[in-house]
Length: 402
Image (cartoon, rainbow, N blue to C red; front, side):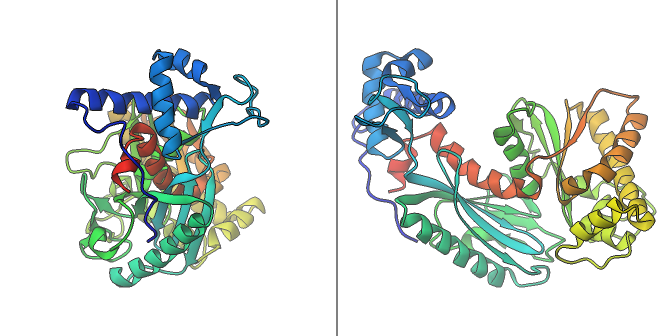
């Protein structure tokens, strides 16, 4: 991996701990103000943050030196017309990027997102990962991470971190995939198998999908239940803008909630789990289709033509989702439910029976259900944006990763 260019942290050196912490918080305030409202003049940043102009000037000098902000020079007016020409600040389109990666049952994907939220590079590999050794899959993933990092390097960008979305349980604050039934993997330390990677974080794909909804959909509430429905089904509960992770970090295993306790055996060891009725493979088989790449699109085409078998399969999936979600809604009382993943593209046929079952089992409680605008892109984008958010929340971290 190409290391980031060296950056001086002179603005933080020699300060007592309390002053250093305050300066880091103020750096974050400036970054968030420019990110949310920019381009802004230095005076406008001071007004937005409540900091003095002198303090803002010193903070901005550091952020510009670290390639986190850029200041428009003479003859280059602010894009949004705010501030005096030649003095407007904007988040840089150079410097650090967040690298997001996703390990799916049938694909690998990597992307780089800059501090403006723009995807700058991407690499994918389609193919089954179920049953393949973790070492082989992660070697393929590392190759695509290197390609994305190299492509970014040619554009003046460098990785601030790598976040990997996985279809399984990840222990809180760890890089260990504890259990992944749909991959058939044993307990796997991703950190040990991704040597030389940028600073690494790992989380369940549904969690990253839920965060993507929170961060990237302007209309998203701060309290909602996000369902990520692929071959497996996970969920992320966002409460007051934060993920509810549970004691061990395993919250959200909606796919293994039993909807018919006497139903077919599941890979998790239980029976009648939601995944056996609403997971992608299960829905395709119920529709008379063999699982495989592109089959969900074929299922949608058949449903649009009024194919009875396809419609029956999708209605069954929606009903099963409604049964499982009723328990979650009754227990947790979210403001809304958002369905992502492959089932988001099948929403016209899945959501009506889901809403019908949910309403019946929750006494008609007001809990609107919608399809994710991000669809199956949510986990990958959420992973990349988690790194970007970490830089915005603590801009000085870029000096520690040099």
